[in-house]
Image (cartoon, rainbow, N blue to C red; front, side):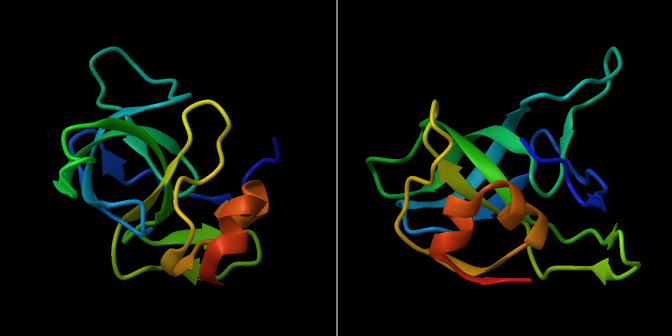
Length: 133
């Protein structure tokens, strides 16, 4: 797996709610856990752009509600810097649901733009996204 090309600030702690940016049926998800997070005792795990998270669907279709799903964070409100010196800020926090084992997106289309760092690591998500910023 390719490394991130930016110094991303992890600004989404466990318990944060994100909008679901795809057409999978989920509308709002809440972070339960952050995968591959190495932390300190009693420190709350946090996620940033490109992090794989386990979340619970809070709003959506009746078939999707109350399910635990895997997702990737594609946008965050907190600013972060890229290697070339530019600062990136998005309007909202958003995630895209993925298949549990394969890492491919569940949905067929993604609303809004996604971060370039996510597009570099996950080309299948970039292929169905409306745009890459």
